[in-house]
Image (cartoon, rainbow, N blue to C red; front, side, top):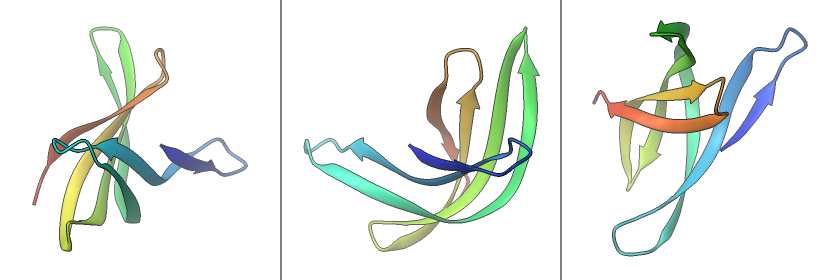
Length: 80
């Protein structure tokens, strides 16, 4: 994940890479961040981002989460 930060510490995801089932590396560029929120689940702090991106030529809306403790990103779900 490549992300940017503003002067107040707000994270903005820019692009990420992942390995497909065919062992290809695909780069996804985030077009817009629709919303951002903070989540706390059983003491685990996460930052939630709803983003739009083109994946395989199709515009997709996805929820990406960043774990503050482990400093790991994950695609939580595709919304559309």
